[in-house]
Amino acid sequence: MSTKPIGIFDSGVGGTSIWKEVHALLPNENTIYLADSHNAPYGPKGKERITELSTKNVELLIKKGCKLIVVACNTATTNAIKHLRINYNIPFIGIEPAIKPAALKTQTKSVGILATKGTLASDLFHETTDLYSNGIHIIEQEGEGIVQLIESGQLNSDEMKALLDIYLKPMLDANMDYLVLGCTHYTYLMPMLIEMLPNHIKIIDSGEAVAKQTKSVLDKHQLLNTHSTISKHQFFTNGNPEVMQSLLGEGFKVEYLEF
Ligand code: DGL
Image (tube, rainbow, N blue to C red; front, side, top):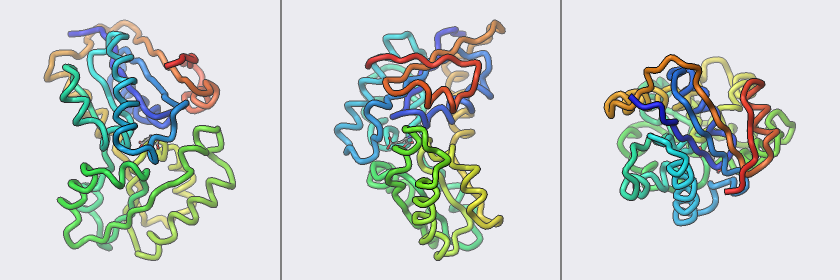
């Protein structure tokens, strides 16, 4: 049993989509969320820099007493989680694009994946794709510019719609029936994507799976918080708190912090 908080970080606000899943499944747990929006996007930065930034976030969360860390960023997971697991004696939960369920369920044998440059270039992503892509056409698309638009509060903008039109076209031309969202920011595009895509195309992300895995690892390490007092949640950003506030809704306070 541990009342210590779960730490969650992302390059910015996207990981709040994961925080929502974790909070829904584990309402007793206290949490601390770090949005490294000042350094977003991580996608184009390269493995070494992504590892450095992830290390900085992890050290702050450990200093704040976290018992487990959710790397709520596909780019940080695919580039840095091996390093983090080797260097810090705390359980880590990562997030990777949900290629496996899409590849197992596709009828058209055509799966689209929208992710950052850093995720698509990573060894971990290639290892997973190689395992499950036998006989399946995987259309990889970098979502260049999407994270920046979300970070600057332009989620539902004409610019976003125009970018998505470009990025979805090759996937639609290839007759995909599954679209995998390989970046935690992209979960917030779900309403727009549902409107833009034909009904038969299913859109999947890994949020629920990450929450389940978090629960199972806490349980395994006997770290679940079984206290039924009201849980406490702290949200820190080194960017504009208003953007995160608008994604979280009322009831949760977002604080500016330099880190
Ligand atoms: N939310 C991050 C991810 O899941 C965005 C990466 C970025 O900052 O480019 O990949």
